[in-house]
Amino acid sequence: MPTVKLTMAQALVKFLSQQYVEIDGTEEPLIPGVWAIFGHGNVAGLGEALFHAQDKIPTYRAHNEQAMAHAAIAYAKAKNRKQVFACTTSIGPGATNMVTAAALAHVNRLPVLLLVGDTFATRMPDPVLQQLEDFSDPTISVNDCFKPVSRFWDRITRPEQLIHSLPRVIQTLLDPAECGPVTLSLPQDVQAMAYEFPENFFKAKTHRIRRPEPDLHELKSAIDILRHAKAPLIVAGGGVKYSDAGDLLAEFSERKGIPVVETQAGKGSLPWNHKFQAGAVGVTGTTAANALAQKADVVLAIGTRLQDFTTASRTLFAKNCKLVGLNISPPDSMKHESVPLVADAARGLHILSRDLGNYCSPTDWQEFAKSQIRDWHTLRNQLIAEKPSELPGDAEVVGVLNHAAVSNGAVVSAAGGLPGELHKLWNASGPKGYQLEYGYSCMGYEIAGGLGAKMAMPDSDVYVLVGDGSYLMMNSEIATSVSLNKKLIIVVLDNGGFGCINRLQKGCGSAPFNNLLKDSAPNDGRYFQVDFVAHAAAMGSNSEEVANLTELASAIERAKLSEKTYTIVMKTDPEKRSLAGGAWWDVPVSETSSSPDVMEAHSSYRQAKVQQFQAVE
Image 1 (cartoon, one colour):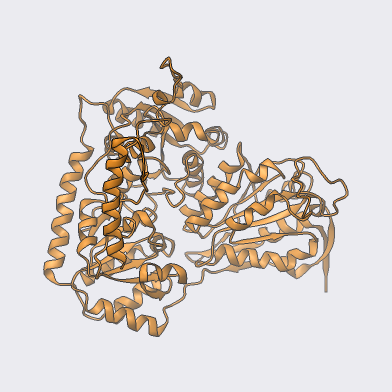
Image 2: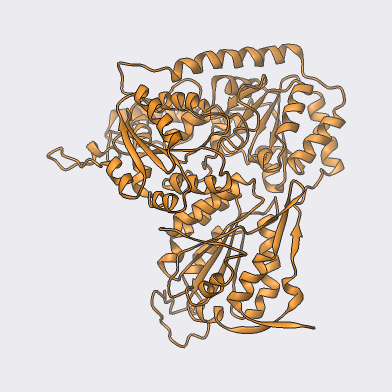
């Protein structure tokens, strides 16, 4: 058998460069690039291999390991999980900086390949710089932290182990039911070791995403339930977008007369103005979506894991409501006592549409849905309208952006109050227009995620909406976006701290404490002010501050004409939020307290818990 002598790092890079994926009938690289921050744990091994492979796999330099992994994850999300970036770091802090990103990818079912430098397999120089020593187990390093947040994890202690491990890596990254973060722990001495690899190990291979059809017995059970539905409802999750099932969903909804509500990951599955699009559901839901959810007798949950924001902590759906879980993941398909229908969303919808025959929901249910949707659009326009005498809240800012963003615009955000307002109020004209991360609700994701989304959608205007708290937590990839000429339009909403959690804190009866800057200041009441405009400019961004919504609209037009990243800063009211819509969220309140407000909040919480228990009995 012909062989080729390569180091482990060279073999790894060569193998990855030969993996392709079929997308819409064309072959594309499965690994279109590698984010890298080099250190002594990866520069001489993997760094050397990547240098000689730049024509096959380009390498991008970032400024923060967590941020570059966020960018990689956002890229995979925008590509509907069909292409995957790799990220490489050195040992020690470079490695552990990516653990948060790995958890984010795991929670959101998004693929990313983490190539993490490790200590010496030979242990000759132990303890090496940045090595964690476990005196009871010398095999442990900080990279073991990745085990619970990885879908697949391996430590390569011999070069030839790649022959077994790498096909498993690719399978995990592309498996629609199991995809998520993959971590390879790469001891720095092993990266440089050579082995005679079989040449056929590096033959080009084109992969196709698996699209399984439903089991016949599960299909029969689901059809029996749906055929008798008097008030059916579809909950569209991220699985609809990842299987490219948006057009099928629209056709199914129209033919069967079934309204659609959307999770955060599923928003954009239907255009915002579709006649059966009732909008966001759950804690951050619209009045229309939640009214339909409360009255539905059958819910077809497609590609959603039914987390607490979607179900209002298991209080949203009626007690006698039956759920059918159409999901590629068997565990997700069974949540909340759902009747499982394990299948790809697109294939499942196609077969359901066929086998339901002439079924159509009752006319009165369809008219009720349409009336709720009309009422919501009227209310929605009131929520986003400018109130000239007031400092604006997030809702009014979203309203301005809706008018400014053309059909190819995409919004990126992640944490705080913005995802709630965007879930309800952003006009997503299609599946690419809404690129939020809200499974892990990770502060600091926004700008890095915007960079990844822009790399995946170079022809789209990418709007990053970020609060001042998240901006301060991670902003370094502004510089990366400028250096790579990947223009972002960043809108920083400065509400003086962590406004969303301040509202939650007060809603639980507590006094404002340690969230807004003014409530975290020394006793003299002074607190620092950040010049966000100067800060963004220092990293190469065009930047300006605006005083009101009219100025914001004008600034966005200037930003759209800019050739590089443009940052707009605006002060907003930390107390304001759109109260219409929404549902209960289970946040425990202290059972004992010297504060009357806390005790009153706990009493309300106990009443809500009674309703929750009754709903799940």
